[in-house]
Length: 316
Image 1 (cartoon, helix red, strand yellow):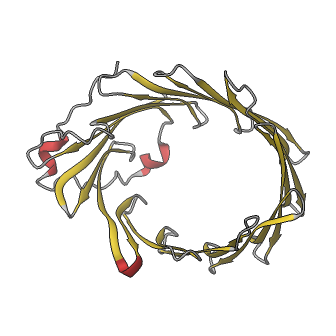
Image 2 (cartoon, rainbow, N blue to C red; image 1 turned 180 degrees about the vertical axis):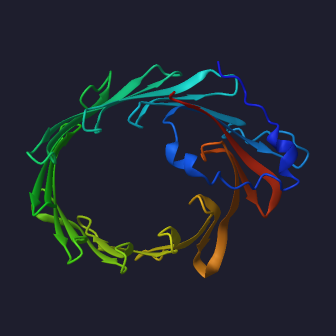
Image 3 (tube, rainbow, N blue to C red; image 1 turned 30 degrees about the vertical axis):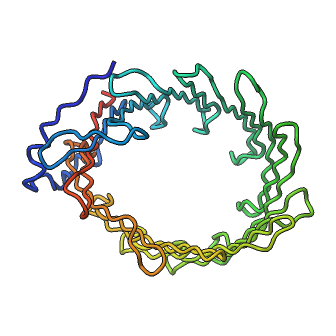
């Protein structure tokens, strides 16, 4: 059972004292590797009381993540407010750091689902073939696939995936072309070798950051669907604006701001006619290694705030 984290930071919250900056010294480059992260999340009102939420949402959210010494997550558990396990995930990796197994288990149903992968590498340690299967105890091989990767001059130029899903077989082929910056200039995907399914063109800024992508999908028996995405960056190459629109008249714009540690401090999302649907602000408190241990999410429309606290343990 998880012990609930202490809420001493709440007293400081409403006095605006928790907008700390991370430790700026040479020790930031000497961070020990994270062993576990215990995380708890909850809503708090202006009277510092933890708020009840709608039935569809939990009052509390608990997670415990465990990491191996290579920095990969090896185990993750989600718990209810009493510390009882809800869902457990476990991960296994090969010597190249590629995930070869993911198993999840629901404590409520007892059902285990899994995904297992096997990789074959070429002489340059690039993935040549990936075999994958997923399912559960009732459908042990719900999906089985084999993906082959083809390279030229060090670049991936073709990817072919043969998949059997619920006894139905399909083949997806993706072709890649590159620009003078050695960035993917376009990709084309075919289903069952004949049906053109998707085309995407990419455009980059002078630093090589993805600036625009223009995609078209071609559903069988339907009209083409258009998707466009635009991004802008700050001087540290953080995305500060993301615009997404489709030929189905959908439009959204996201705006971001960051602190010196590269963490998000403001997030806004707009839809048509500049109608704002999300407006959030973030403040952080850090441990001595510069990793955040408290996140306070504020909303201009209410005095209630969303708190996330992390208890981090490190390898010695």
